[in-house]
Image (cartoon, rainbow, N blue to C red):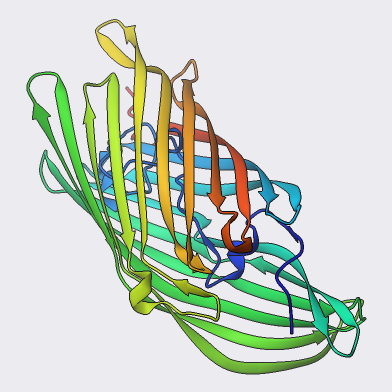
Length: 394
């Protein structure tokens, strides 16, 4: 028999121990500072992964490269005097994109889909005296993707993203500091598809409205499982292949709206995932439908070069509210955060540097659960260059 966790460390918290871990709900591009909002957004300054249809906005003969880093600090608290913190620095996104012709945009990249990272202590009774059990989880599901987007006419664009989902989810258990530990290894792989559409049109002479929608198809994830017994030097003493496990990744519906005059931009998004229809349940947890709402404002200062006006410094502010797919002891995990960001162009205009910050909290103190207070900082680097030009000589 065991008790509730007495202590927990790690970036993603005890909540990542359930299902397939913490789902990555944030977008680590220039959308970060507006609450990771941008389903209806089209931009020729960065690659917008939130909608597969957006890549048709890449300028003709341009090649684009994006990389994003995240630093994170998390504090953990409960009603039993738990007060701990953790920090992390990681690469969250790599992506490239280019315009194949006047209508067809292509992008490929790599980013996390879910993360598992936790450590908890509990008490196990093997005899009359209790032994401390340490349970550690790590890994997560990664996403590699290739996206194709086509501009149907001056107002409509559509796109399809082929996502390759793969990665390990490991659980290591050690009782009483013994020299033998038990490790459950799970490895997932499957292909998932996400589709999108965007519409842009003018309202009067100054304003442009954008509408966007995405749909992610249901996917059955296959998990290969293995039980491994290790000694204190992490040498495998015994291993056994277990029956494979199937897990359903549900459909996701999402929609967004944008309104801009080229200087001021307002964005709003909504996402819904049907986890309750396909989800699993345990003795004290179950999976429920998830919803995420976000909105943000962006102001772009313009620079003039002769007869041409280009985008200069950009400032942002946003807000996000997320009802998680996880319910523990009758409490659905909620995540509330505020964001801000600034985008700075280089002198040549080919490179943009972006810094975004986010402060928020997740979880609750009710029913012996843990509340997390976190701070995220994102550095995003975007290169835009003309590559596909045939040189001519006199």
